[in-house]
Amino acid sequence: MRRLAINLLCWMSLLSAATCPAGEPPGNFPKHVTDLAGRQVTLSAPPTRLFLTQPRQLYALATLLDDPTPRLAGWAYPLTVFDPAMAQRFASQWPALDRLPALSSAPTPLLDSEALLNLAPDLVLFDLSRASSVEGSPLAQLLDELGIAYLFIDFNRHPLENTPKSLALLGQVLNATPRASAMIALIEQRLARIDRRLADLPASPPTVLINVAPGVKVDCCRTNLRNGLADLVTRAGGDNIADALAPGASATLSNEWVLSHPPEVVINTAGQWTAGDGISVGLGISDAEIAQDLRSLSHELPGWQHLDAVQQGQFYALWHGFHQGPFAIVALERIAQWLYPERFADLDPAATFDALLPAPPALSREGHFWGALNAQ
Image 1 (cartoon, rainbow, N blue to C red):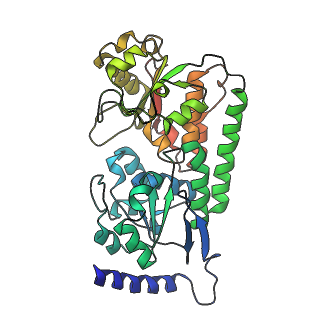
Image 2: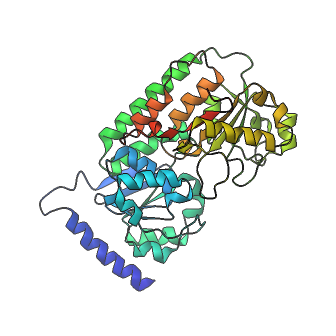
Image 3: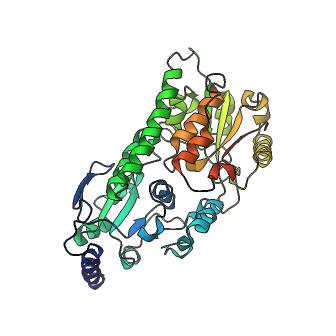
C-alpha cells in the first residue's frame, strides 16, 4: 500500500503539471472552498479525475456539464444498480460511461482503498450522510496524506436547503459557476412561488404518508421522519404522519400503525431498480403501468383498499431520484399540486425538470417520473 501511495503521488504530480501549460493560470486555482460538512478544502488545480462514491452524484454533474465523462476516474458502483433505464439513457448520450471503472457491481458500505487509489483520483465526492463514517477513517487519512481532495455534498438529507449549496460548491470546483448560478436562480424562483401561495395554509393540512420504495426491501413502510422527502412534504403544506413519532424512533412503520393513523395522501417513491421490485416509474414507463403497479400495491397490503387515500385516488408514485440528485424542486412542485390542486394547477414540473437537466431529448418526454392510482 505504501509503495502504491508513493507511486500514485508521483503520478498525480506529473498529471497536475501537465493539465496547465506553462505560463497559463489554472482557472483561478488554487481555490479554497467549504463543503457541506463545513470543511475548508484547498484545490490546487482543476480536478480532472473525479471519483463518485454514489452513482447518482452523476445527476448533479449532468446538470452542470455538457459531458462529465472526461472528468471521471470511476465510481464505487454503476448507476445501473438504481436505475438501469437512466444509466442506459446517459450511456447513449455519453458512450464513455459504459467503460467507467467501478469498484463493485453492487452497493458496499466500505470502499476498497487500494482499488480506489489505483484509479488515481484527484477529487472524491462523498454524500454528506457518510461524513461521520468517513472523517477520521483510514481512507480519509490516506487521502489527506496524499493530498487528494474530497468533498461532502448533499441532495438527499435536506434537499431544499442543501441542493443550492451543493450546486454552488460543484460550480466552483468544476469552473461551472455560471451554469450553477442559473440553476440555483431557477430553483429559488420556483420555491418562492410555492411559498407565496402557501402563506395562508388551512388549519388542518392534508395528512401524508411517505412510503419509501415499497416492495424493494420491505412492503410497508419505510419512511422519512425529518429529512429527505419529509422536508418536501412539509414545505408543500402537508402533515407528515411520521412526525407523530418521537425523535429517534424507527423509520419503518408497521402496517398496523399506518392503518391506525390513516393518511389522506400516500406518496410512494418508485424507480427501476435492478431487482425489478417495487413501483416502476421513469424512462419508458407509461401512466397505465404506474397505475397498475399502484393498484397492485394497494391490494397486496392488508387493509389498504379501505384507506381514504386509496378510495379517493390520492395514492401516488414519485421517482426516487428526485431527492437523490439536484431535482428536489421538481418533486416539490408535483407534491404541491397533489396536495393543493387548485392553488398549483399552473405549475409545470416536467418543464422544471427539463430546465434543470438540459439533456436532449428532454427526459420528461421519454417517460413518466410520477403517476397516480387513477391515471387520467
